[in-house]
Image 1 (cartoon, rainbow, N blue to C red):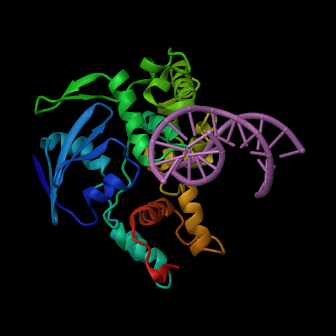
Image 2 (image 1 turned 90 degrees about the vertical axis):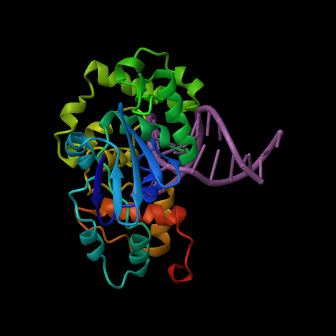
Length: 275
DNA sequence: CGCCAGGGGAGCT
DNA sequence: AGCTCCCCTGGC
């Protein structure tokens, strides 16, 4: 196991921030994450966090996954002094990190996310993993399911995933798998493109629009300039930024601020000073 | 039963 | 850019 001391890192916040649907609280202060086919447990006390894996796996995978080399306080410090709403939001979610997750996994996850709520998105994803993901065993000897590969899904009837509760999103996922397997959608290539070009490629997928493409860019490609606007963000911007969100001021890391706002809107008890 | 909302998107003008 | 219609599930 690996022990680290780190600022701006908070497991409950990362877990609830709605970017990783396969992270959950196992027991008090103890979290598990499944990324593609890897399983990890973590535990956090005050300023120290324990990763239950060996040093090598931490260095080559999880360190990057949790973006541990980035100092998030510098993002927060650059928030305009006069913007008390954003100051409050950033303070409230200051332990959130923008994870570097798997591209295919994010495509599927955010196809499922549309017109859907977080609790149900989690259930949908667990359903397809249990049904179509490779069966794995963790260090405790417990079974878990990897994320299903495109090759496992591309040949299914388009409505097959309705039994996993995806509803009308079933065909989006099956068609996306088809695009990946056929090579129409080249994941490796997309990973190397600029934000603008990657987004353009993702928009070609049936069921992927502006918002979903931005989520994929932000959470898989780590394009921090992506600023996904969903119903919550849209309402928040109308309330607090009547003349528009100052994207230019925060050019290059708007996505981080989007997460603070999103998390604050969903879980922060509204303060009077915000209205 | 109807109504509505949930981290939208497609297709059209 | 804006509009309409569409899709499925769960909660009230």
